[in-house]
Length: 201
Image 1: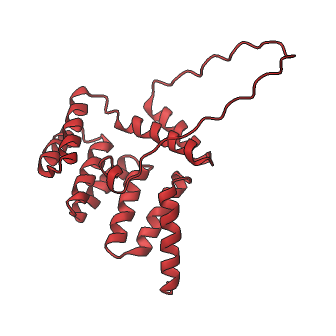
Image 2: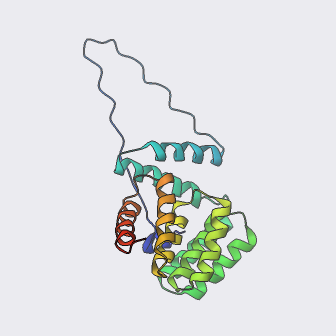
């Protein structure tokens, strides 16, 4: 769910890169490999990043990969949409939620297939504690991008806040299938599992 929900329940990110071993001084110098070509297809780039995210077992490295995924998600491909998203973020930061919603409504009208428009609006509704509207926008987000771990985390947060612990646990477990090293989701799964076990569920 959520770029604004990155402040509330989402979950933003960074990572690390492993250093390649230095060649022995006795070895003949080998020219560096050509950098891997960057695919012009955003979906191909996302698929590769998600495959890396699922395999990665270093938390910081996973955070960096997740950050790259967020960059891909935030790229609308439209200067006008990007500007509206910036204005909505500024309004959200200033807690001018009605203004933010106006901008996000325009984003969704102009580009209904842009998942982050729905995700950002879900965030604003969450911050206004309009959970029903937030869940509706989360549903749209996940229809467009089922791997949106931010939106799933937002759904889990709503389930938890409304006392539906089992559904919250299920949602956090879905997050970990996509992003196994998300620490906040790991902690929530442990906490909710303990609470449900204590309640005999």
